[in-house]
Amino acid sequence: MNLRRKHLEAASLLILLIKVFCVNTLTCHPTEYLIGSRCCSFCPPGNRVETHCTEFRSTSCLPCEKDTFMNHPTTDAKCFPCTCGPDSGLKINTSCTATTDSVCEPLEGFYCTDRTRNNCAAAKKHTQCKPGQFIKQRGTALTDSECSDCSNGTFSDGTRTSCQAHTQCESPILQLKRPGTTSTDAKCEYTSLNVPVGIIASVVLFFFVLSAIAFVCWKRKICRSGKKRNPTEKGNTAEGEMLNMMERT
Image (cartoon, rainbow, N blue to C red; front, side):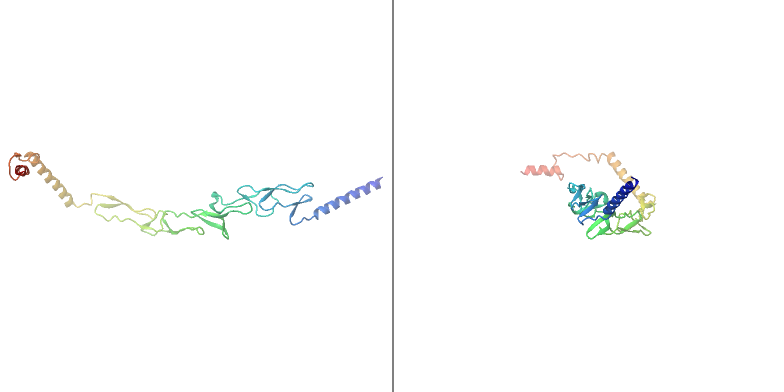
C-alpha cells in the first residue's frame, strides 16, 4: 500500500514538473503575447485591449478614444494621450490620429527644449530680463532670450532692447530730485529759485504799470465809454460815414 502511494506521489510530481517546464518554455508567435499559459493576439495600432483571449474566444479590442492614440500593436488596456497640451508650453502643428501622436511646436514666448526631427516634445518660457538689464537677443522657437546689464549712466526696466541714457536736468528752472539708477531714470523738478532776479523784477514791474494804466482809464471813464458823440453828426467817425452814405443813396 505504501509502495503504491509512493508511486502515485512520484507520478504527480512528474506531471507537475512537466507542466511547469511546458509553461516556461512556451513561446508565442510574433503577432501574439503570452498571458498566463495562453498566447493571445495583439490589438492592432489605433486600438487597445478590452479583454484578453480565453480558451473560447480571441482578444477583444476597442478603437482609441478621441485625443488618444496607439502607434504599435499592443497589449495595453489604454491608448496614449495626445500631446501638445497648453500647460506644456506647446501648441498643435499637426493634430494626432488614432495611430499617430500630434506634431507640436512652442507657444508664443516659449522655446523648444526637447526636439526630435520636426516635433517638439517639451518647451520652456523665454527668460524675462530683470530691471537693470536689456534684451541682448530676443528668444525664438528654438533659443532662449539673452540679457545683458546696463552700464553706468543708463537704465532699462528689462523690456527694452537697449539701455537709455538718464535724463539730464540741465535747465535754469529744473533741478535734480532723484538720481537715476540702472533700472530707473533720473527725476527732475521745477524750481523758481533758479530764475534770475532781474526777470522776476521785470515781470512784477510790467503788471504794476498795467494795473496803474487800467486804474487811470477807469478813473477818467475813458475805458468804459470814452467821449460821447452824436451818432447823427457827420464827420470822420464811423457813424458819420454811415450817414453820408445813406444820404447819397
